[in-house]
Image (cartoon, rainbow, N blue to C red; front, side, top):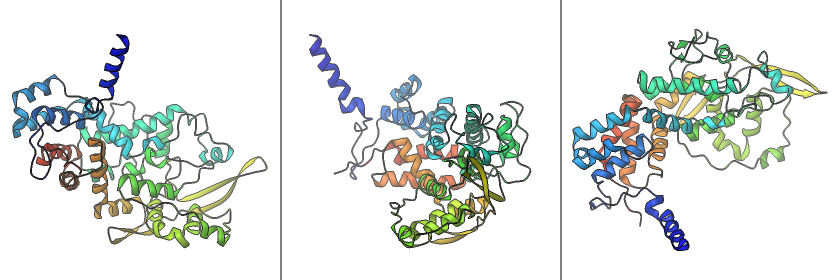
Length: 402
């Protein structure tokens, strides 16, 4: 009957082996892990690098047993990483790791008179959906070029001066001439201000305020949690500040305001690390422009008024991994991220969760993360992913959880 077929189909659709990616057909080891079968290897490789099921070529290789040989496994990894599907999957990772969803949505650059005064000479008409798309495209082309076209180490992605935009407005923000076409060579900023992915509008435009103020706290939290994988405690309830009845002059710089709000009571603990990271990006305003002075705007009597112009201060002491780093600007912030090793750890942890869909749960999971972090220090991002898949731990399932 129809009812019987409905029940049968429903049972199939809710079965764990339909909903989840099972890897339990291999041989169990004494430590509780399982070696992957040929077809499980093909499946894992495809889902990690393509975010898709294995194709006919992969299934044929599994059937022939070649994925259990070093040469066969390496050949399959090379094939997968050479496919446009690998580019698409890694761009999806970059979008998540770099928080692209935090960018202003189409039409949301127009946030009233104070923001328009801040954005001048760029008009609301120029900050349109085409401009928003150009911000993402510039970041995507930058990352794909340094990952696939001219493969570089992760550190270079955070230091390269290459700019890829063809959009006139975004090029003006960067202070460069836009590329004539998407196939033209990249350009560079002659001032040397726009170095690395953290200097790009893809990052600096995230979470703008209504009056164009930068937000060092949001920037700091984002970099620490997303990029470096550092867990932060729950935000304080600002009771200390409320009891102190803080008065912040409207002429204060953003940094002075942040320091006043977070420099006492329960806030100090986390903000000793959060604020210096955010301050490292203080030379980039909420539109992505490089600035040496910060203008602050307010709404009064129906008019957007400039209430203060303050010099940018990005100097701070940043504690990372038990070492105090002197941060003066974006390059020295990147120095701290690289020297502390937190950049590599953050990438490796986030990529593991992206690739496998779960938190590390076993010694082999932790070894994979460490191996990836270590590879990223000396190898290109592309080659580091290849080394990950060649690891013996990649060919195991996680240890069963009691």
